[in-house]
Image 1 (cartoon, rainbow, N blue to C red):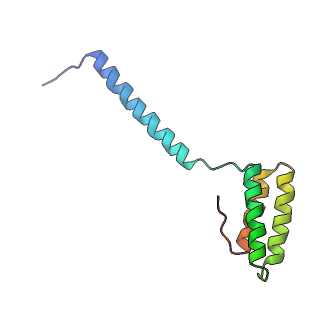
Image 2 (cartoon, helix red, strand yellow):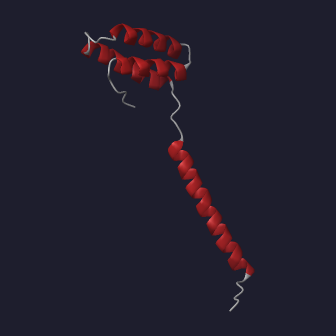
Image 3 (tube, rainbow, N blue to C red):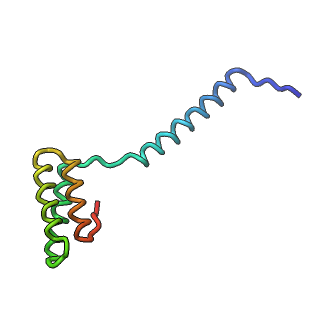
Length: 101
């Protein structure tokens, strides 16, 4: 049996399917989008590094962590938040501490 649906019905079904496709694609994109570092991100990371240095004064990689903190702070103050936050994350990693976002 060959049933033909009205044209308006077919367009409605195609529109609904397209809407579902767009909605699911946008949710996937939103879920995979990374947070862009800002001045607030740098400030938070700097505070975390300071706290980690204070609580790990005898860490074996303290000099490395201090070097990364200084470089990260300098880059953040110059407005290069992405590179600055990378150095601040490296400082935390050298101390064995995980960053809190």
